[in-house]
Length: 225
Image (cartoon, rainbow, N blue to C red; front, side, top):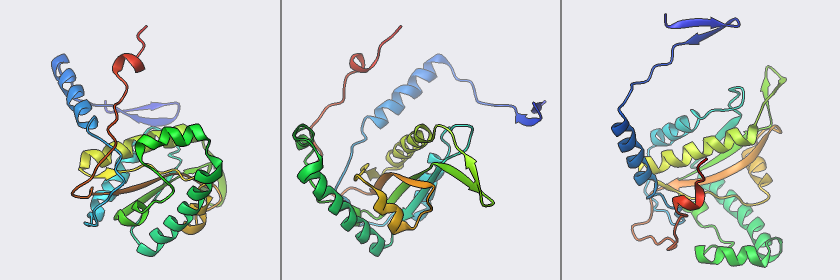
């Protein structure tokens, strides 16, 4: 029996190939080793990326779990140079204000090893920008639909997206200029959608440097009970 009715709703049998413990270990090690090579990159090559790749990345992000399966996200894929220019100008305006007054001295000191500043040329240089919006509530046939655990759901989808970008062979930077309301205005998004994350995506420049930093060790992030 491949289908079952539960409380009046159809359920289908879940099927997944079983693997040995050795294969589980191998799979998990290989995925970690692949993801451990992921780095935030802010220098993009102008080489174009097939739009089919970008669509596949967003489809992967959309497989994320969400509260009551409401899938409270919208992904805006941007390649238009004029829109990218507008986004860069608006983002840099906010970043200038942040670096000159909003951010504490401690915050700015913590950012120094990363080499960041208010200038964001990658917003124009990357062949694609993905702007992720979270839907505070849904709209169906002109009526509001309640959503649940919106930030958590969209955050998980963004994690899937970042992993998919790396697995595909591309690079990205997660950018969160604050406030981000200008994204809603430039992209003309409806009131129930709020900007969550801005992700430039593409190939790295042939010669690219990233900060010489280390991730926390397992014993610093894992507590076993």
